[in-house]
Image (tube, rainbow, N blue to C red; front, side, top):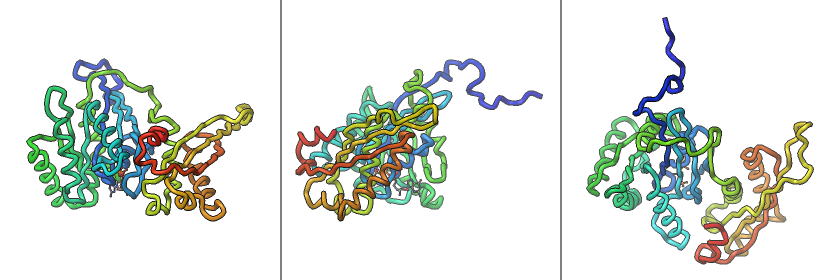
Length: 329
Ligand SMILES: Nc1nc2c(ncn2[C@@H]2O[C@H](COP(=O)(O)OP(=O)(O)OP(=O)(O)O)[C@@H](O)[C@H]2O)c(=O)[nH]1
C-alpha cells in the first residue's frame, strides 16, 4: 500500500493549470467591518493593528499569504468613507489608486448589519472599476458570519447579490467568512488566488509584511497614545518615527545579548490642550503610553528598545497640505 504524500503540491511537476500565481488583493469596506481581523486570519499572524473603534487603520498595511502554489499580497486600506477633511480626501484618493492596481478586490460587508448607505457608497465607487478592458474582479466577502444564524445569513447573501445587481454589475463571488472562527478563511484565499496571474513569488519566503518597520512602530505608538482618550483626540493625533538606531556597543552576540535600539518618535497634536492630555499630570500618561508601546515594539523588532517620545503641537495639521506632507500623508 502506498501512502498519500503529505504535501501533494510539493510533489511532482506542476502542469500548466497548476502554475504558481502571485499578485495583490485589496480589502475594502466601511470602518469596523473586520478588515484588519480578516487580514490577520488570512496571513495567520498579527500584522495589522486591530481596534474595536473605527478608523484606526490609516496606512496601507500589507500582509503576505505564502502558499506552495501562490503568493497573495494583501493590502488593507483605510476605511473608504465620504471625505470630510483634506485628510479624508487624501485617504480616499489613496484607496482609489490602490484599487486600480490590484488583481482582485475583496469588498467586506458584515453579516450582522443590514446593507446601509456607507456600503452603497463604496459599491458605487467600485462599480466603475468592475467594467471595461482592465476590469478588476470584486469578491463580496460577508464578514462576521458567526454572529448570525443560517436564515439571516442566507437573507444577507441575497441582499449582497442584489446590491451588485442594483448597479448592473456582478460580484465575482460571494463568500461568507468568520475571521474569529476561521470559517471559510482558506476558501476565501482560494477564491482570491484564482484571480491572480501566473508568476513567481514577489517577496522572499519568511517575510510576512513589507510594511516599513517605521510605519508599524508609528501605528503601535498611535494605538497606545489613543487608548482611553479617543473621544478627546479622535483624529487629531499623527505619529511620526524620527529614527530607529542601534546603540553602539549595546549588543553582545557571544553572550546572546540582543542590541538596544533607540527609537525616537514624534507625536503631533493640533492644540496645546491636546498636548496636555497626551502628556498627563507630571508626564504620567506619556510614561504609560511609552511603556505600553515599547512592549509591542520590542515584540515587533525582536530586540530591546529605548523609546523616546516627544509631543509637539502642529496647528490644524489635518487641513494643511504642507503639514500633511511633512507628517507622511
Ligand atoms: N464576531 C466576530 N467579530 C469580528 C470578526 N472579525 C472582526 N470582528 C470584530 O469587529 C471589530 C472590528 O474589526 P477590525 O478588524 O478592527 O475592523 P476593520 O474593518 O479593520 O476596522 P477599521 O480599521 O476601522 O477600518 C473588532 O472588534 C473585531 O474583534 C468576526 O469574524 N467575528
